[in-house]
Length: 313
Ligand code: NAD
Ligand code: UDP
Image (tube, rainbow, N blue to C red; front, side, top):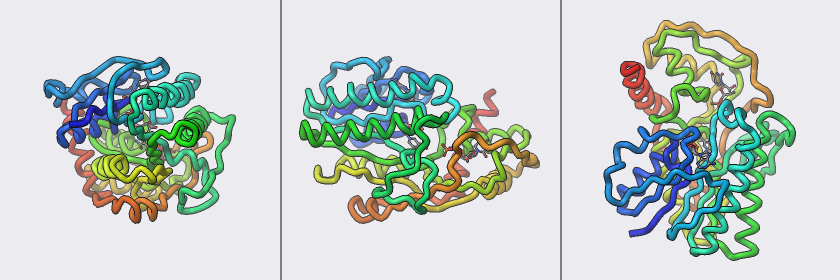
């Protein structure tokens, strides 16, 4: 049995990861400051004797004894990370320093939830790990993008300087049950709007693209990567290469929910990337991992989750 720390463990991805690690027979410590995470996300396995929740902000040092660390703490939705941008940068940078310091002290292997946002508004398509990106350092998204880029730098410096065992994953857009209904991300927005009979808000002309990965596939990728040979430090892209425009996504959501909602067009947010698609050759080759869940099937599960939530409102 391994003792595993998951920071941001009460959030969307973190709670699914904790659940999966518990199922695999581990002792899991979830650390979260509940900024965007919720107790209800982990309520289902709260009584498990091998699960523990600690309210803590990763910007401050943490003294625990663990074998592995998954560092996921950081708000991921643009409205949440832009609400308090200084705190967002601190969470990524101070959080990385504190978790790397912890990993160094207890000799734990450490995984970083990095992001496709390190590629910014990419000029290379699809994006391989070798691409250095096109990021605005002083824009509204910079607190998140540059915070995550600096965290990657810290991970690689701890690897080179202190011989830490690191795993840096660049996560592309992921969706599924337990996303916050009001966190502003496109999948949750469209589904909630469709279920409530409100207009679907497409930003810009809706021709910008994203590639959506279902949460179960993503968590499988995290665990495979963490348990891969030490030489595989990453960065490794994890995501689903299936690429769709936001208009196509809106259309799919309307069909699946059988909603009569209309589509309305709203201004495109600042620095919104035009296109995004992961090149996952490395993950396929080294981790023998690729996503299995089709967008339609993943959306069905997500709609089921939000339908229940709406019925309880
Ligand atoms: P989320 O907002 O649901 O989860 C983040 C969690 O971190 C929340 O529980 C929040 O309360 C916690 N947190 C925030 N600041 C903290 C702090 N200072 N100390 C302790 N806990 C803190 O987001 P998510 O979608 O689950 O994302 C998890 C991680 O994956 C994030 O690091 C995010 O950047 C990364 N990621 C997610 C996606 C995606 O599509 N979901 C894409 C790329 C990267
Ligand atoms: N988007 C949209 N309508 C919404 C929310 C988002 O058209 O109600 C667009 C947004 O402009 C972006 C894409 O959907 O082009 C994905 O946005 P999200 O915030 O989910 O993720 P990110 O931009 O971080 O990839």
